Image (cartoon, rainbow, N blue to C red; front, side, top):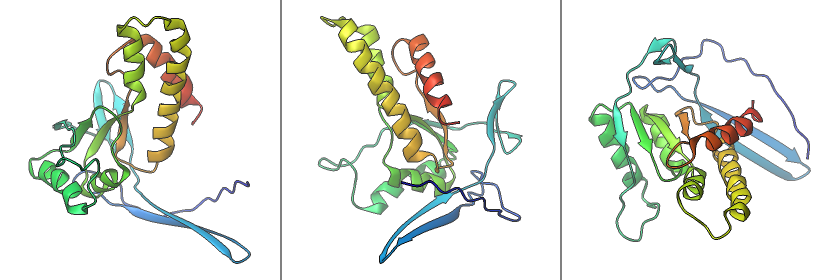
Length: 198
């Protein structure tokens, strides 16, 4: 496989923010003989940072207003096929004045992330691995040393997977790794894993 890097200038672009969630779309096509492969993703421009004890979005201090949210769909719906059912909860959040939501217990479905992007809601996103090391830290396994390497490997793979999958979603500002468990070990693994992406 070959890697191609292309630099594109976007003149007079608008920054994404909860009040005006401006999104752009980029489409890449690769043709080899009669075969064409195409991928299209949406993205936005923003600058989000934690500075002097405050969150700042696009240079302005922002107060995050929201709550925990675990999806509650009817029995039999792991992820609803109906787009309106996915959108309903996010529309209600926006109507309540939310600009932020924490999604615990694993990462959300990518279709839901698209809706958060569109409606201008920031997301604190967890990944499945943040629970695995928690179990290692709290429970006594018969052979914990044998399990430790396995759980650390799953933790790293979970972080990599969520970054690779959702890196074009501008809403994913906070990747949370401290839910339950041995925080020092988690942060050390998270730091070394994430540095490989930047």
